[in-house]
Amino acid sequence: MPGTDEAAKAITAAVVDSFRDTPDPRLRELLQGLVRHLHAYVREVRPTTDEWEHAVDYLTAVGQTCDPTRQEFILLSDVLGVSMLVETVNEQGGGTESTVLGPFHVVESPRRANGDSIDLLGSGTPCVVSLRVLSADGSPLAAASVDVWQCTEDGFYDVQQPDVQPPGNGRGLFRTDDEGRLWFRTVVPGHYPIPTDGPVGRLLVATGRHPYRPAHIHFVVDADGHRPLTTHVFVAGSPYQDSDAVFAVKESLVVDFAQVDDAGKARAHRVTAPFRMAEFDIVLEPATAGPASTGPETDRSGTAGPGTTGSGTAEDTR
Image: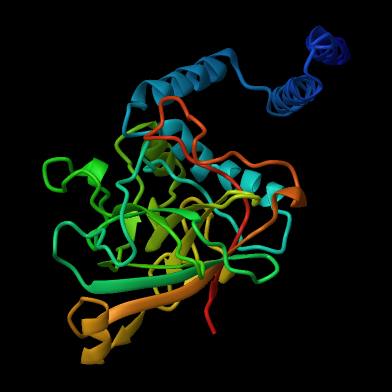
């Protein structure tokens, strides 16, 4: 009805105008844009009162599912593709591509030295990860902070199995050496389903979507004078690379975890042969390349821990 449409638009205009005196211009822009788009969605799909109440109940359940080691709202953002979209629109180019933080980052990973193992279980396929952190001009970044976390070969993070895995398994906070290099020992992570025992899982079931993520290792990288970066390295050949439940796979982030049979190389890296090895560069953009990104110290209340967003890519070392 024309009268109803006019009344609906008048409500939108009034709410948008209510934020006109917001002192922070960016906050004003964000809130007014949110109102315009949310109201446009309601006018387009015309949810019933019962449907809107169900939506409110659903979001309430998402919030109630969050705890110190699980962030269901990040998971919801991930499966709706919003997390990946935010990363994409904030990329400046010239560095390693970014991807989603995910719900399993912790407040503070254990500090580890170059060559340490992040595998505290001693099982699974031995793996060595060797990387360089570079600036966009190719210069090495010494003393860069590299926060690493991954699941086990069976696809579980430490916070998911507190009775099986010791705290900090699969995690490490490293510093690069004078040449921007670091390496660590671990196991090849497995592909896994995102948690499906909560509201996000119910959404996937209701829509016929699978919950799986391809095998990957997470990185948050930060260096003075550069934009912080949140990214992954994906294990080449892992299942679900073409249908990641959170839409986070980028071709440039897929790295070959090659099998190495050389006993001498195994001894040099303090593992047994055969083992798997991944080698790649992570390139950071200068801080002046665009708006400041959220740094590793930023608190995400209610998450498994603070994290970062930024832009960047893992590129195979040639």
